[in-house]
Image (cartoon, rainbow, N blue to C red; front, side, top):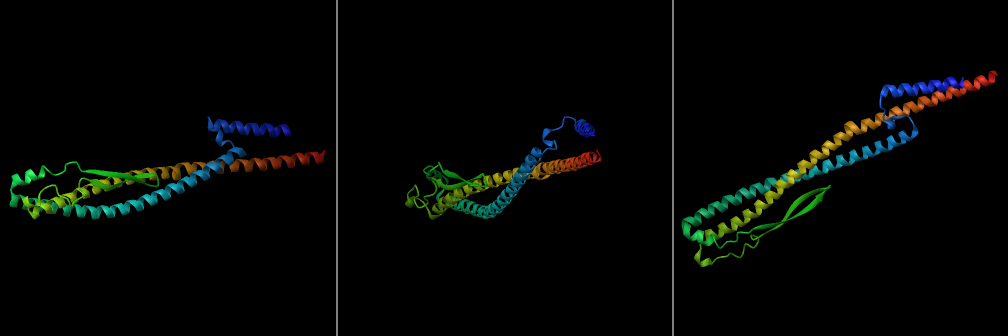
Length: 231
């Protein structure tokens, strides 16, 4: 009787291997694989939760940056409009040659000091200062040779340079946030739609097979015990 059950168990294992072809050893119905699948399932769920939190944080950061972008864009348009208007007035009052001569004394090398801050592993640029245009009180020409319109034009262009740098930082920040939001969403979808269901199915399959094996073992023991009683 015992040999018949051994043959039956071997036949079930052979049919299982033939049905699944080159079966993954992690799908074999043993307790080690069950514990391993449960551990990986827990890690996958934890990773999905972290990615979901990261996505929400990045979306909130993006919404705040977009609000800043609207204000900076309005200020930049106003500064450029003022700068071009005052330049036109100074050209009318002083003449093109005098304005061109004075412009040659203006600093040409404006440089921005850009640093980075981290938000959920994403490096976002931050402009601290713009070298060459931050000191707007000191003008590199004699005030007696110019008019007030030229002074206002210089100050407006300095302000426009700062806003242009800020707008560039905002554009780069929006690009980086959008890129990482898409990557995070793609990874979260991969975990939620592929990895987690795969491990859930593996745990369910191994658990069912182990329970079925325990029931068969219990039935076999009862049959052996009954045969011994009859003897």
